[in-house]
Length: 478
Image 1 (tube, helix red, strand yellow):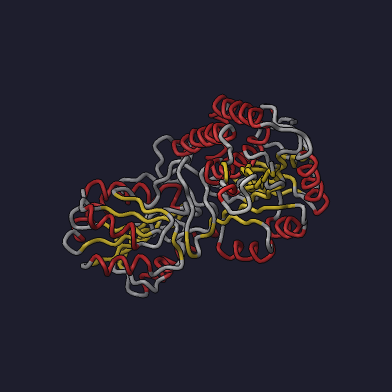
Image 2 (cartoon, one colour):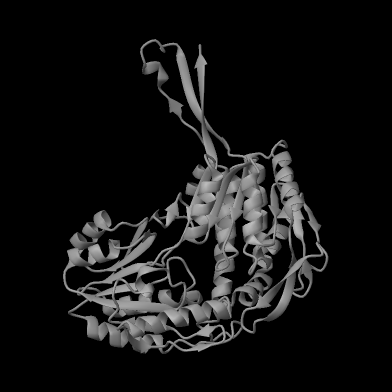
C-alpha cells in the first residue's frame, strides 16, 4: 500500500487483496479541529460488484480452521506492534481521548484472539434419529458451514473494535466479507485490512469499500450473492436494511437509551463513579452509555451532589492530551443537536445541574434532573455526553419506567439486595442487565445484543459465529 501509514495520504478501496484509488474522494476531518486530515476513495456501483465477486470467488479456495486461526492471531500481533499508529488514528478520526483510544486498540487485539480461538472450536453434534420408529438403521450428525458472503456495515464511534467484532467471527467461520465502514471514521478499518493481508489472509476474503453509506448500502442489498448483513447503526437504517434484505440473514445492533437504577441500599460512591465514567466515555457516543438514571428518593439529593462534583472534575480537551477525559463529538452538527435537546428539556421543566455548554464540536458533560419520560433526552437516544436523572420510590414503579422504552440493549442496577437483583433480571426488558456496574459494561467474549428496537442477533465472537454459520444435518442410512 502506497504510503498507507501517513494520515495525509489518499486511501484506496481494498478489493481482492489490492488497493484501488478513485478520483472521487471524501475528506476525513480531524474531529478536534474540523480540518482535513486525510482523504478516502469513493466506491461506485462497479467497485461494489467487484468486491462481492471477489468475496464469492474466494469462497471456492480452501481456508481451513487452523489457517483462519493463524491469520487472526498474526493480525492481532501486528495490531499490537502498531498500537501507537492505531491509537493516534482513532484519536484523530473519532476524537476519542488517547487513553481510551489505546484501550480500544487493546480490546480489538483481544477480540481477534478470541475469534482465532473460536475458529478451532466450530463443531456439530450427534442427532439420535435412530430413536425414531423406522430409523433404527440410520445415524445423523450436524456440521456448521459458512453462510457465504457477509456484508458488514459499521458505525463511527468504535471503528476498530466493532469492525473486529464483525469481520473476526465471519472469517473464523470460513466466510468472506465486504466491509463498509463509516465514511467519517474509515481509516482504522483500512489499517486493519492491511494488517490482515500481511498476516496471510487470502485475497478476496476481506474487501473494504469506502464511500457514501446510502448508495453503497443500496448496491449491496441489490446483490443477491450477499447472503448476510451485519449492521450496527441507527434504528431507521436498520429497519430499511431488514426490509431490503428479504429472507437473507440480518444481524442488527441499533442502539439504546440505557437506563440505570441506583437503589437506596447501594454502594453510593461506586454508583456515582460508574454512572459518571460510563455516561461520558467517548463523549457519550456509545450505544450502552449511561443515559437515564433512576435514583431512589432516600439518596437522591446526596447522589446528585456527588455526581455533579465527580462530573465537573472531568477534563474536556484535545484527544491527544493524556489528561483529557472527554474529547469532541463526531461533528459540530451533532454537538449542536445535543445542545438543542438539552435546551429543549430545560424549557420543558428539566433542571440543568451542570454542563450544557458547547464550543464547536466539544460539549461539556451534562447532568439534567427533574426530567420526564416524554423529553427527547429520555425517550430517544442522545448519543452525547448527557445524563438525565429521575427520582423514584417504589421498585416495581422503576422497573416499569425502565421498560417504558422502545429500546432494550443493556441496563444497569446498583443494589446489595439479591432478591431485587433477581426480580430485575426477570422483569427488565433488555438483552443484558449489569448489576453493581453501569449499563456500559462490556467485555468482548460476552453475548451482546438487545431486544425491541435495539436489534436482533448477538455479537461476541462465539455467539456471532453461530449467526454467521449454518447448521447442516447429515443423515446416513446404514
